[in-house]
Image (cartoon, rainbow, N blue to C red; front, side):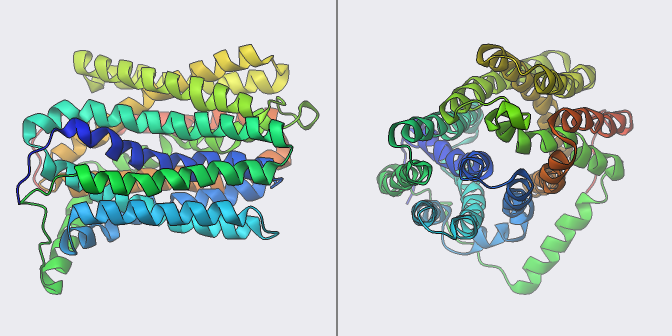
Length: 420
């Protein structure tokens, strides 16, 4: 069946549904646990494990291709996400909330990563080449709006409920329950509006054929020019940011006596989750325009500087403990720089993948290694902060940005044909 339907009916909602679980599981969960009294070392270590499904999703990606259709995977994973978020909400009312909610978020992370695979595959099947090019910006915009919704609106709502009810577990239970309801509605809506492209069908292959193809894809990735430099770049370019992101919200929430800024939950929702993410989006748009105009080779150094230099703002905030307005301005600048710098990182990964015969698979491998680069520093960031305090921790964060910068001169930035 080859249905034709205006992509405006489903692309925005499909990528909004892709972004909400990611930001809830990897960002909002940190704020949730901080408000529930979990210490920085524990929350940073255990929530860092939640990146793992995005690291290893390439290993079960072929399953989505050969079992059922991408459309059914999308609907099924959205319904399953509703169940996970509902269980996470209920777990907050129990004494074992940390273990039970973390378990629900872990299952949700695997479901979300699978949804990403299915949604991206469906995008390429449901839209023709011209539509894909047009809607690439639309999908990115709605993914970013999902981030604002998850780390901005929902965190703000939790903060307002905390103030109104005086009950932190109940406030976050209601917020997660609202998210679960959203994922009850989304698959119902998508069942109606998602077309059924003729090309969206399972393509079974023998185990032997699949194994050989998988090995060749992996082997060809590691045969790329200057692969050691590329791997070092992927793992180290955002090392400082990976340490910072796990402690940014706890720092904003901790009392001034504990070295933090003492913001309320609703204020963090506005400062970090709304103003900060909006600045990140603007930075990403500007970064994309600059690279399209001047090229990656000319832009990568200034963009790398913009990614890392604003980490110094956190050093200043740790010492000066500025008022809320100034905090919002500094967080906005830091996130703007991150948006610009991350664009250079993404474009490099896409350009390397575009030179390969296995474009989709190689990009998936790179993004998996990218997620690993975010996961590993998070394991030690909370423990380190508790040992040295916020001011020294943020100075260390600034120092850890240097290895990533040192990988840039070794990158193959000249685009040329490459056999894989």
